Image (cartoon, rainbow, N blue to C red; front, side):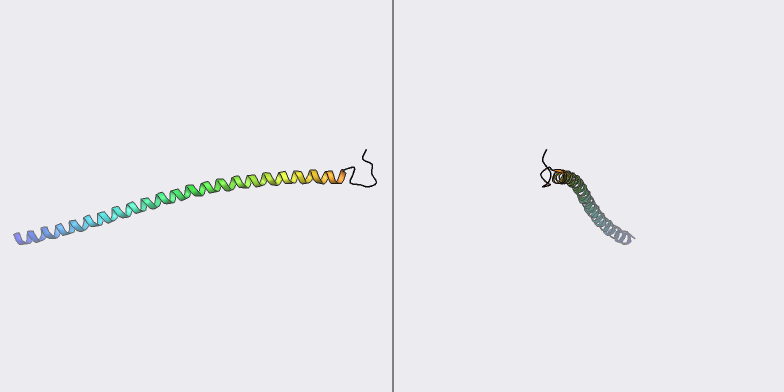
Length: 92
């Protein structure tokens, strides 16, 4: 009877060691998943920053386009209605 108990105790100790090993593996996987989550969060923040930069660039380009449109309008007006643009017209 004591040999059987000793055998069972050894088997239980082996199972306990296997469970401890599995626990270590699970903890390692959990740590790796946490690391990946942090990396993805960092990438998300970087992407949000890039989106802000792109929006700022878009607004700047829109402003430049409006400025160029205004300058083009002024230059066109000056060319069309300048007293010196028509040879038969007097300046004053």
